[in-house]
Image 1 (cartoon, rainbow, N blue to C red):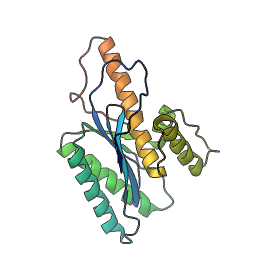
Image 2 (image 1 turned 90 degrees about the horizontal axis):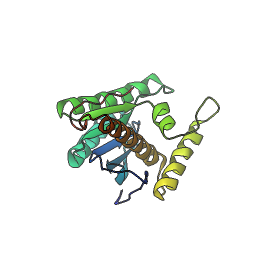
Image 3 (image 1 turned 45 degrees about the vertical axis):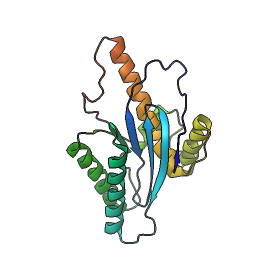
Image 4 (image 1 turned 60 degrees about the vertical axis):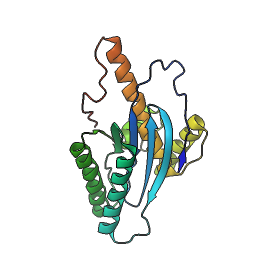
Length: 196
């Protein structure tokens, strides 16, 4: 786990949005997680349960770790990757269970939640996508994006989580600036954010 890294991703950022964000990528064995204050990356890590062979136990342990991290970080917004088509129905079911657990945690603890399809957060950050772009190329793009913007080297899982969190921070900042420009109140903690 690394803490204290930051990025000035927008030179004329203006007023801070003061939002604590916790982001997870989509996985049932190794899940990347990243936490932010506004757009400043504060830390990241991988929750690794790849050695746990019992799928039900692995899902439970993964969710317990996620819930503990949410409790420690106390985010204003939780951002996670939506379930994508997998090679097996069992993998889709495990990912859906984890996503459902995170959604339930958000509802029961009054935390705003956002679910991004992988193609959505990648598009928001300008990644090349399409039928001819393989999974390995997408993962490499995320790692390069993090290296270019934060000057840190991270695993594929950490890179995805960082990119998911940053995509949300950018979208939230744009929405906040647009509302302020239109004379509306800051939406922080007033509106439950919904994603695709």
